[in-house]
Image 1 (tube, rainbow, N blue to C red):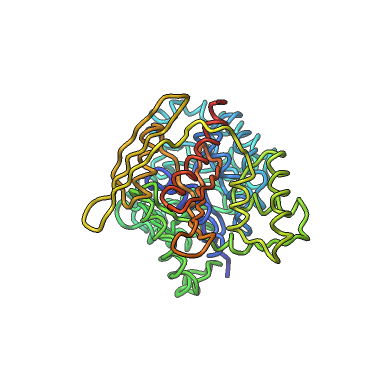
Image 2 (cartoon, helix red, strand yellow):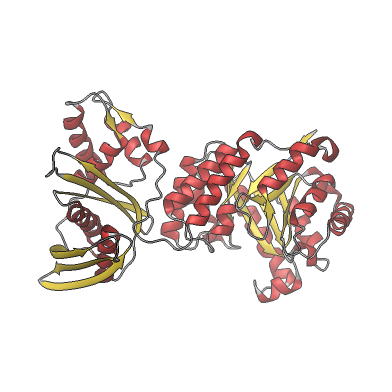
Length: 469
C-alpha cells in the first residue's frame, strides 16, 4: 500500500480572508506539523519584510512537515523567497503558472511561448537552489493542449511534484478520473513523479474528486484543516483511514488527534474575524517550556529570546543577558514570562516620543468603557477618546486613534508585584509592527495606568526605530 501525501493549504487560503495575527499563523503551523500533514503551504511573499520574517519564524517552528512557498515567474521573487525559506528543515519552492488560455492571457498576460520560457527558466533556477521543487499547473482542467507541453518542461527541469488544479471546480469524479488517465497516456513519464491534485469545491465535489484522483494514481492531495472552497483535510483523512484497502493508499495524519487539533485550528481561524486590539491570542505552551537558570550562557539566553519571537540587536542581547544574570542569581529558575519582562525593561531603551500627560477612564456594568487620553509629543498635546470592550481596550484604542495606526497586540500580561489592597501591578505589552516584535513594561498601583505606560513604552520603540526620532 502506498502512502499518500497530504498538503495543507489552510495558511495559504486563509491569509487573505481571515485576520490571523502573526502569532496565530505560527501557532497554526505548529498544530498542522503536530497533526502529521506532509506539507504546509504558505502564501507567496507580498510584503518582503513582514512575509519573509513570517516564513523564517514558521521555518523555525515546523519540525517534520515540508514547508512550501510559491514564487513568481522571475528571478527576484525566486531568490527573495529562497532566502526566507532556506532555513526550513524541508523547504519546497512552488512554481505556479496558468495553463489555460484565459488565465495566461488575462492573469499572466503571456502568450503560450512566453509562458513556457518563463516556466522553464523559473524551474531551472529553483532547482539550482532547492532539491524539492513543485510545478503547479493552475486551471489545468481547462487547458487547451498547453498542459502537456508545460508538464514535459517541468519534468525535464527536475520538478519532483506536478500539481494539477481543477480551479473552476466544474468536474465530477468520473470526469476528473478520465482527465488524469488521458494525461498519463499523453505524458507517460508523469507516472514516475508525484502527481498532486487541487480541487475547488464549487459543486461540493472536491473531496470526491480528490479520492477519485488518488485511486487513479495521484500521490498528493491539497486539503485544508479549515476548508474554504477546497478539500477538507478531516474528511480526506477519515476516508483514507476507513477505506485504505479499497483506495490502495493511506496517509500519516494522526487520526487519533484529528478531531482535537482541527477543532483548535477552526477556533483560531474563526476568532480571526473581527478582533479588537485587546485580544490576546497567545498560546503559552511553548513559552512555558522555557526554564532558565544562572548556569545558562549567553547563547542559551539568546535562543530563548528568539523563541519568544524577538529579533534584537547585539547590544540588546548583551543588555538582556546582564539583566537576566542579576535576576537568575537570586532565584533558582527564570520562566518565559520573567524573560519577557526582562526583554521589555532592558532591550532597546529609547527616549520617549509619546509621553502620557493625562487619562480619564469611565467604566461600569451598565455603560460602555470610555478612555480619554492626552499624550505629549514634542510639546504638542494630542487627545483621543474611544469606546472599548473594557477600560484597557478603550485606552489602547485611544492611543491608536492619536497615533493614527493600528498595531497587532501580540501579548498582554498583568502580574502583581506586591501584596495588599494597594498592591503594585506590573504589565507587559508586546506589539508587532512590520513583522517585528516590540515589548513595553509598565508598573503602577493603577493597573490601567500601568497598561497604558507599557503600551506607550512599546510604541516609543517602534517610532524610534521606524522614524529615527
